[in-house]
Length: 92
Image 1 (cartoon, rainbow, N blue to C red):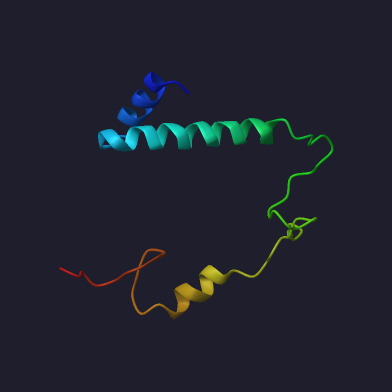
Image 2 (tube, rainbow, N blue to C red):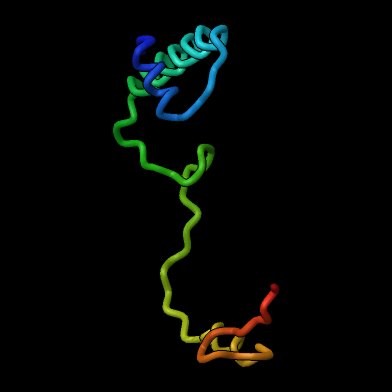
């Protein structure tokens, strides 16, 4: 990333950097982009996406239809209702 791109990015992010910080940010961003290039070059063909970096399988449950309505039970125990909404007192 050249300094013009970095300056534009910093302006778009509405960051304020001291003059001595811009060199540090330039080096850090360059290191990150180099690392991203290394990651992009890693062979990932046949690797399935997961929800966690260390899991080999996703922790998901099958979609099942649930006949029980929790909403109705909650509404029955509410002290005050307005239509199908729980009414709460004004705070102000």
